Image 1 (cartoon, rainbow, N blue to C red):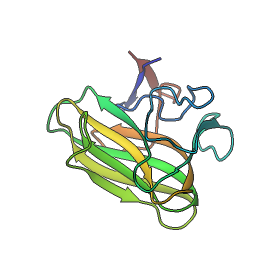
Image 2: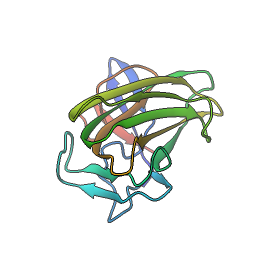
Image 3: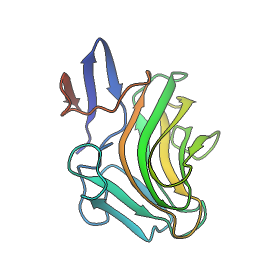
Length: 170
């Protein structure tokens, strides 16, 4: 299911990330999220959830080589996108990244500090109509739960099509 969310919250906002609350998925599939490398654990979880009924549970098997990512598309080239997510760090350091659309170049990143729930945020200009958004772990065994991923032209609290005043598109 490929859905983006639009919220009528004053100005119209769009969350270009699909399945940002990890509600869609089964087993080792997290719906619209792709895997780079081989994570030790990649699953939908009902533990450590901030929004909805699920989060993504990730355990990385190698240093900065394993990742989950998504190509957020539909924005205009040059639009400055704000990407934000909440991550519950169990072990290691977790990196949020944003790269040029469709690739792994010209990136920007933010990283976790310590353990527990944290919000990571990064800004990046859209190219080729998109931004590649994802997470890396700092070491083998780096572990986290992730929820509430948003990619929007305006910094905003997380929303999806189930949020009050919002709807699903696509």
